Length: 238
Image (tube, rainbow, N blue to C red; front, side, top):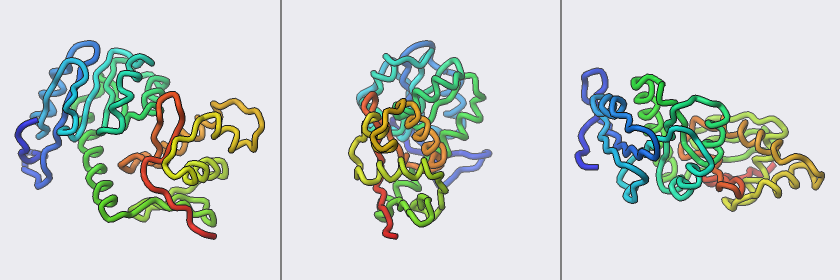
């Protein structure tokens, strides 16, 4: 992705470097109208067929598919940890969005969404990534506070948790970045009782929504294995 440039907002140059966007088309047609609009909005864009190997020089990777399938998510399994990934697809189905977010996507957007809104979402995601990188450089971790039953974000924000959400967060925090399988999470949460694992998936989804305004994402998914905290989380003493 050549050419850094400056972002253009409302006809004015911004001091923020232009986000570099790599669009990988896995199925369907390349979203030419969208990439043209992103270029006019100040993004530096490149489009390839299939998955590119050199994704590290991109700030955001857009993956275009007709329909979200297990096969498509399997192809992306090695990409989630390397860069920020936004999935673009034809049909805006809630189950598809959940599957992709559970697999590790940073966002999921329908291709029929207006290009102006997509550009705004991508810029916001890039901005949060910069803020998250600054927080990481300052070695500021999330903190899980049992007395408040809340997560304290690196910027000082408070994320209030229900008792169930707190218990799941505590299990993940004590794993210290290791993957917690769905089976282990279910057994630990329910004290060994036999409960459907989808109840734990629902709690993970709720936690992901509550912490979704931060980047890097707090909760990550190891496809078909389980969940882990992707950034450090300290458990405060009572």
